[in-house]
Length: 344
Image (cartoon, rainbow, N blue to C red; front, side, top):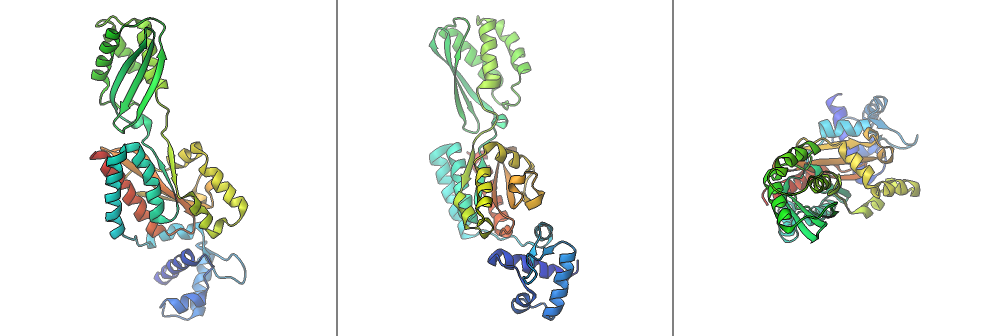
């Protein structure tokens, strides 16, 4: 692609993002200094259309970018916008919210903060359960055969589970069992606490304290599979921003997107398409594997705890998205989450 065509494509993307109206050659000639006539610009636009970077929604209208055009723009032409004053304000706000509310509440607040920065709908997954690291376990007696299992992870997740045991167990046995499991399991991710690991511990434990094998097997099963769900929660921010976009004036399109935002399982599937590496990923329109989002773009990043990927944060909006602002904002919020979680 020639340099002039690159400049024309970039200008069309910028104009269309601002106005939501097809862009014509006269508009470009009037607002940009390409050093050529509107007719030459029109010829270049025709070439870009033939190469599938642009399309003409109506015969008498100007051109708009295609998904291929947006892809070329974000890969080769986009200039990221830096956050300045807003950035420091959000750092202060983030640190305050984190200190006051803890990890889970802060992650939830982050979704609204990102939406405020971008004016699009934001999506944030709370820390992935399986990647959370075991921090503490307590077995609390409720009766001779009923126990409350309390499990705490390094991501601040606390889960309680009542276990009905097949046989009686004493307070002393529960204390011994709690101490033993804490000694052996602290530092392992929940994903690493497999049936095999617990079985190996059972063999060692049965020779040290008087817990019956049946009770031990029952408790192990609850730790391994039932104490925690596979995923955490999905938090949305600024859902109403969908209604601000002219692309979704069609009621059927609004319904499709709103139904998508109501389905956590589908949102997790979309977020799973984002890799765990550093940086921001952009999925544009038809690049999405889910039909429900093929008219939208998804810009997202992974946030980390001590270098471990534990959650995703991103923005959903029309393909006519202000990518330069969104990419910078998503990266900033992912980095802020990672920093606060790691340095808690």
